[in-house]
Length: 168
Image (cartoon, rainbow, N blue to C red; front, side, top):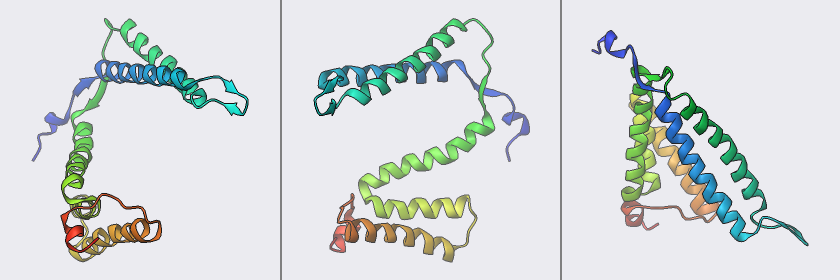
């Protein structure tokens, strides 16, 4: 059992998450702007050059994230309100950790087998569904998408050793 006093109080203030995300977006927008200028941001005879729209999207992102960054730096000495409490962080981690493990399993098992595990985990752990329904849905959904992508659209997605063993 968790202690109710353990859930009270902020874990992280707002300052550092806002600062780091704004800094990341400033860097990303600068990359977009520089690369857009490389391929051309003007107007050609047949319409906009390939960097036209990315340039303005990067510019809008730079202005908005830069204003957040500067605003956060100007408020540095003031009160740092809570970004999230422990219970909120716990809820996010209950989703983020399985998703991270899923990404690793996609690498080794392939997309379809890893998806069976992820769907089954969430249905059993968070949905509290019984084994028959969990098995049917967790196998049926990846099987449906296997048929859609591999057979109908002829788009091969990442497969693992089990699909290769079955001849796909």
